[in-house]
Length: 452
Image 1 (cartoon, rainbow, N blue to C red):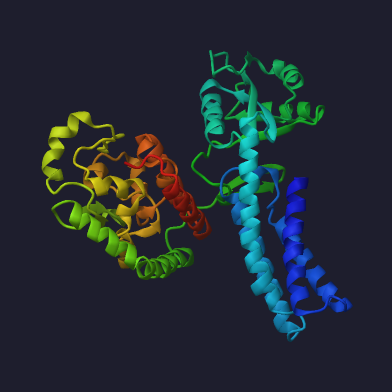
Image 2: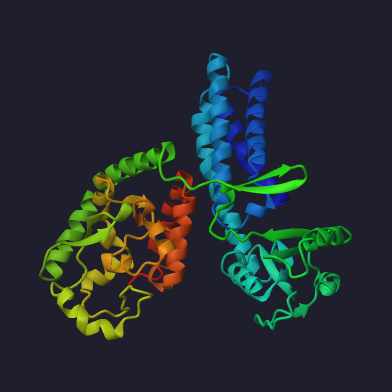
């Protein structure tokens, strides 16, 4: 935390004072006061938005969202002050200070996160935890920590409180909550994480929190709302009773209009900027093999409406006719057909798929309103016919050119993981989250995984 505070202070103060020095003299007291006040305001907003809270560091997009929100709020307040002061507070502080400074802050957070992940592989993490709960809940929680939060939490021991057998790697497992104090001392744990409900009754968590006070150990409760992101959960204490409010997901209104405006703006710019790339790919596809340049396929969009999706053709012209003969070699998950070394893929097609360039024509789908830049993966009608009841929630919003499925492994994902990621996005999407996913998509194109 101290390192993060120092880095934030250096970035914020350095940029603000550099701008003020460029437009003023810094010899006058008012220049120093303005620069100092703007820097302190920005740092205060970062603290108020919780951009340095341990709970958001090292994993997920919440840390970046809070930095963005704090910086946008700071820029707005300084801009208002500029208008009120009739230019005494210079507008350059916003344009040349806070706006580029936001990019600098995000970049430094990204660098620090990389360092944290490297240290995690060497055994250093922010918190050593003991997990307590029933076998199924503990197994799921430990598995998710290993996948997504290994740089934050290191599970040093497990207390299985229902008496069931449980083996998870080489993590020591004891039975009975009476062993908890011993595990904390021996393993140097600084937190206890409760997975699900405890077998010992409704008062178990309360009694556990009192016991942990003696050793100054943090208590973390893992919510059973596994598909609900933090911003949708609000705590409201009523007469000593902590109530958890879960806000409904957003499928209409101003936020959805903002998402559509972002789609139109970015897709229009992309079509203009990428015109030479489109022309080059079209030429190589035409020269490489016979057949149309653009492959058209019917997909299922929002509310189950069919639309025609565009892609650069990456397979031979008779690919559909050869599909049945290859069904026995299917390596895809669930109802999906995937084959790593599909003989129908052309030479150019293999490169386009590796770099995800075959999907560029879908930008036209985004502009037309069939798709969004970010969303669930657009399914085939045959996939939708295999959906279970809850899976239909993928169709509540427009499918995406990219999404959580693309930045988390694509074809390497199991069917269950693919559905889980899509449903999580549908329930918890945000415009800021979309921008972060698009940034991760660019990285995934440079270092592709699961694309074939």
